[in-house]
Image (cartoon, rainbow, N blue to C red; front, side, top):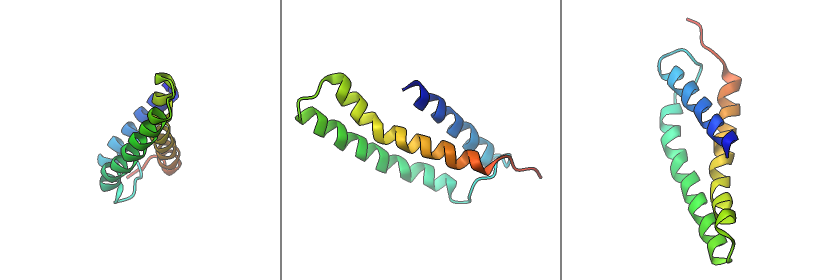
Length: 88
């Protein structure tokens, strides 16, 4: 989970720099960061609910529920990291 938190901070940093013109981000990034959360949280809730109904331990339910969010965070960090700084 600590890796996911570090990746989330990197994504926030790169998106904030993108809004200020210091990081190369696509024009659709602002709307993307809102819409992707709905999908990730829906998948997380479904996964956690399924794990709960299967009688998994609380730790397993939490890990299962965080998996979709972690995947999205990791993919965002990689995608935005490839774009790099924008020099004007």
